[in-house]
Image 1 (cartoon, helix red, strand yellow):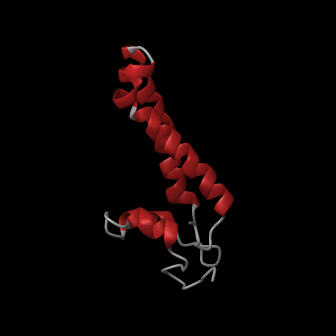
Image 2: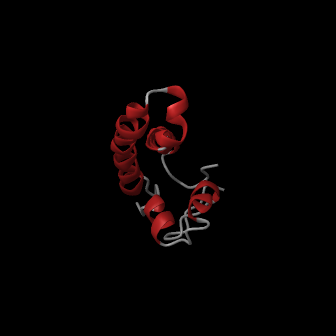
Length: 103
């Protein structure tokens, strides 16, 4: 996981925030069992989007190749097929722009 030539600590921190925001945004699916309906259907999803949207933007803007500064997460979500974009990001080991590798 995360073999691309990137700042792995920063990337993992932002991915964690994105996942937490996504869980909150999905509160209508699990929230009614754990909290009030108002929290599950209004408050938690709004908080989730408020957390996940900046985290996604941060991944797109800040996750770059250490050599050429190419935006690797942005490449994954815009240039790769939607079926394999995240898988590619998590498993690729070479920058598609300059060829810099961690291997």
